[in-house]
Amino acid sequence: MKISKMKKTKSISQEKKPAESRSAERRCKLSVCVFVNNEEQIIDRCLKSFYDIAGEIIVINDGPCSDNSLKIARKYTKKVFARPFGGTCEAHFSFAVKKAKNEWIMFVDADEYFSKELHEHICELTQQRDVDCYEIYWPTFHNDGKNDRQLTLGLEKKFYKRVLFRKSKTRFEGYLHEKRKVDGIVKKCDYALIHRPNADIFGKEYLKKKAKWASVAAKMLAQRPLPHGKYYYLLKAPVWFVFYLVYSLIFRMYFLSGIVGIRYAWMYACYNFNLNINLYKIKRDENCYR
Image (cartoon, rainbow, N blue to C red; front, side, top):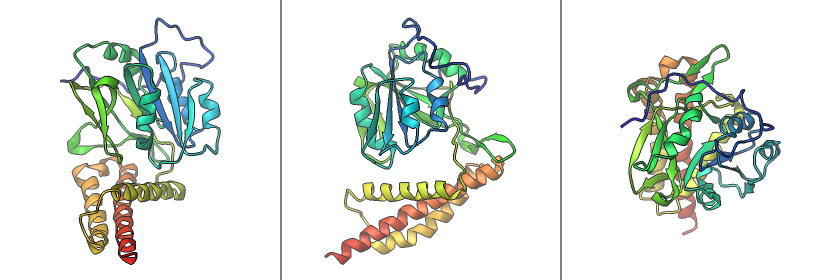
């Protein structure tokens, strides 16, 4: 059951200023937890989009901060933390929940921000007694150098992200891309949390970052005994590369988004290739030490 239909995905990031006083009457009993990794170019856009309506804002940097991200964040909240490097925002979920004082919590990445509709209705969502968690509409936009385009999801139509939930009704299982397990009612909501990455997804730095994520993901998966031998993962790497490339371009119809969609398909394929190569290396090293 969907809560509402989103008419536009317009940002309100230009309308709010941190210097403006926040009315206690307008603020929701909501803790917004923002996960950052040296995001000085976009964190201001993110925080402005909900600054005046969030009852609490918590900002967590993954690892030591080497830019002005945390300095900017402190304009909006005193609850700013630089945590040990985990490689993913999931590494800090439990810490964020423990720090949050409100029953309702929302997880937001630095490259995301509230649409105007989500900003207007977020308090209503948290006041619904018969709902324990919302999966929020999550459109992705990227600039191809000429136009600002939304990534097409083909047969999947829309992608929803489980990010708004009651603390008492939610638990986390696993580590890698943790799924929020909810003991209660989950509903979809079409008020958008807009995802607009700032990075050049074909640039060397972004590809290095994705390769690092693949390495971290492999180490997390290896915390439990891997079920297959090393050559299984070595052979799986090129097969999975081709599979994800075709799956993204054809089934998810990323080709409809032009060069942006092709780049995303390539990125996902490279990530899965690197993930399996790292799993192969882990199994290989295990055999060396036996």
